[in-house]
Length: 394
Ligand SMILES: [Zn+2]
Image (tube, rainbow, N blue to C red):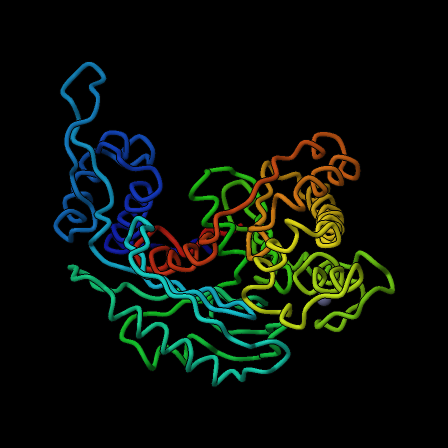
């Protein structure tokens, strides 16, 4: 049976929709918003007036004329409020404070040792509270203050309920993180998978309708955008390409499976390849600096260069599987491994060129900037409070 929606609810929905259009496509005139949304001009003007009164939207002067009067252009008021984003990885967590346009006004990187159960969920929660409180103190004065915090996690999470199902390499299960953190803060807290955060952040930046973000760190996570929407799957856990098998009886994985892609193309794999090619210093271990140290060594060591090429071959195998499955227009490699791209990307391109089919061979392969995931996390409160709908999904 079709749901009926009362006028007040419909106005809220339309207001979120107008905000979303200005947020994603601004600066725009009222007429352009009317054309994009299909809402009549009077409704758009009334909603825009409300958004201006609330200081979420501002007029920024006159745009180009289409023959008549020059229109007044509108954009999101970046300094109306701020959002906190946290990217939790196995060896580090990065926290930012971002304005409503995604401008980073504060950032802090904190090394952590969370691999294989070294950090309990309570200890991780304490660290998150500390880092978020630190970010709160850095917030400039604004009319709406902090809208919320978004946390990107490396594993299977339910973004609707805010609960963690399983973080494979951290060994944390069944934890309602949003419930726990909400007790510490007066603003809402949201969680999502790190690959999804990266994918959505890249989508907002590039407006490519079909893309895959591949987060390569200690493990591999991916986020999938299909036709301009995040693809989450039936239970919200799509995108675990890192745990697809590429070797039938291969290396055992933290997830319990054998031969998972992330065992061959992640930081864990890089460390193994380095040990295979030469003696490596004890200081080279799974840490926030592993990739940058290995990149430095590779400048003079053919063995290190070979290890990165091997990693690139396996990264290419997994990406060829992805592009053959999804036919995206763009594949973006992010995470800590992205900084080593010159050492492995040619191999990835070579392997994809040979293993992918038809036009997938020429898929655009590129590298994300280092803040893609944490910016996506900081966008979660905006998507969930100001815009048309929670992060779009199909
Ligand atoms: Zn696995």
